[in-house]
Amino acid sequence: IVAQEIDIMLSHDAPAIPPGKPEYFDDRDPTLYTDLITATDRVWQVLCKWQPKLAVHGHWHHHYETMLTLPDGKDSVHVVGLAEETLKNGVLILQLPGDS
Image 1 (cartoon, one colour):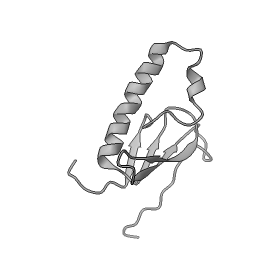
Image 2: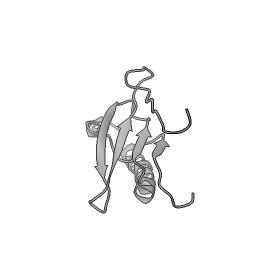
Image 3: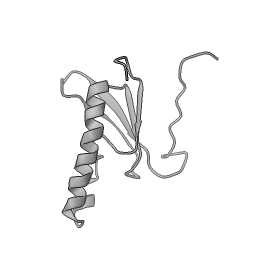
Image 4: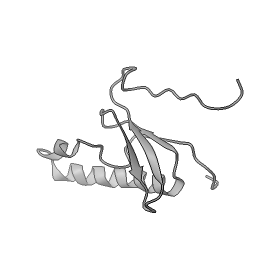
């Protein structure tokens, strides 16, 4: 990818453990948590490098929206986690500028 402004990043995994999900690991194999931290860290690294305006992900089946502050402390990224396969929580529709 050539260095340029990135509007939207779409990934399967999240750039961080979604809010309200740490208790998910209470009764699970600790290696699962380690594997998920590794996967989210990879997405976080891409997010920090390209700094999209919007990051959308699935994986967690947990709908939420948050702003993640980047390491510079000045910039942040709007993150949306999609949930189930419903129009309410599982679909994000964007109207993009361009030719009509």
